[in-house]
Length: 626
Image (cartoon, rainbow, N blue to C red; front, top):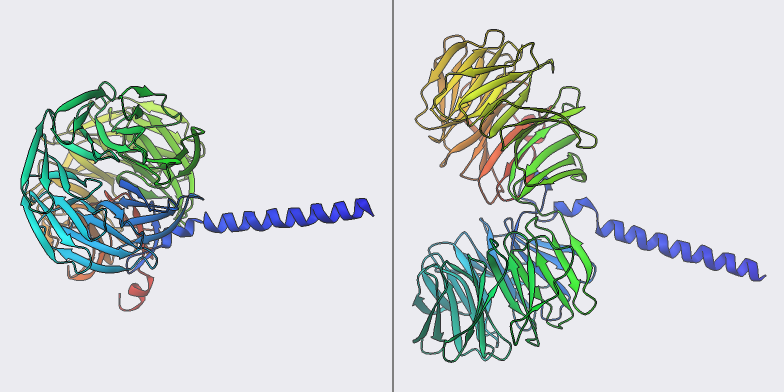
């Protein structure tokens, strides 16, 4: 009987464990990337880059201001709860009201938004700033909101009504804070100073000088007696809040700018986050260094939990890490945030996407194009990748590097199979020939190189950087786009220029052949897309509508439409025959650097500096009339 009861207990225990695992898997599902999707988007890959983080007053949640909105995390379990979208550009800061019922966010779209912290809906939008708002925070009593931005003003708002109460002329301000008693406002500025105002009268009380670069972060100690500040150098400064005297100068790390400072709730610890490598901890009273946490890799923002038990930091690779301060142990790591999504490329079967994300290392990622699940990550510090493409058999990935080398990578494990040397500057674009026997690369050294032939050759003739190279469908020609405002068509066999296409009035960033090889679509810095006749070299049509530089253009697999994207943050679909605009897709919050159709033509993928890749479902659109 004992053995029977023991077996039943073990069985029940296993069932509970299985249930908990299922719950955890549900919480960790890649479908979290479907939160807050823009209209027409079926999937988001990546969660944007993080600008700043803040704890809720009860220490249970973290708000992360990101390039695509405000993410809300459960700080206990390290999982996403919600994504608050509404800002049309990067969100620079987010913070909770003292009672935890509201969140205020500041955006690059010059707006301040007040959100309900339970429903995650916008309650009010405060309009008044005329440029990007860098910082917004509640007063200690929760009755006011203080904001500052690139329009050289600090503004005070009524938190309940949204009415503008005061405006201070302050120069460009990167960070603002209120004293614990709410009587003083401090602002760190682009002019290397810290200004202190009387919050009631608006009188300027003091100007603190000593920084030798922009002041990116300011913080009051919990007692209000000291001010900590960080700027674009490695020096952190501690000031007497009453007299303005400089008390101490702390060195973050040589060659590592101190970007953010924060006091622990009891004032015993000061945390400083460095742009490149370091999170430093200091004795809050004496400024002496404390033993740092392990497993840290750079930070843009650091925040203590109000209960004083945890420290959170947003890293340079845009993961959020949470440490138990007493145990000095890593508790959670929330990954999935990225730097700029510089490019993406479909595998030939359309099942996966390869992308690279800017930062201080190679960050090549392979994603499931159906679910958004991250399949593989290949990273290497100290190197940077600009472009990549799958081979026709999907077994290798061709990668163009910042150092001018071309790498052939194993698509399974990221191992470098071969390194090709020839370019003298960074490689902007790579492409395999249709047969996969040769490859082309475009570089800042003004050349296109063909690899894999009996004798690799350089195609010379452009007088500016070459940003794009694409094979014709039959593999006999290459079209290259350059900063010299031209597209050149080259004979692959001889390496000779067949034609030079002239007409753009700015750099040409992209050139792509139609599926039948009869036309070329090009994207330019002059805000236009041009369609060229390959035989005559003449412009057939000029497509106008973008309001910023067009960075990418390409044909649908059936050749009936052209897709384009650029600095105006829009994706546009055009009729390839008539040149008429068919549809404009909006959802990114920063410049789009790359856009392409999937191999089956039913999906568009766009990669943006906001750190995301959006997959747009256009099958219904195609069925409705194209």
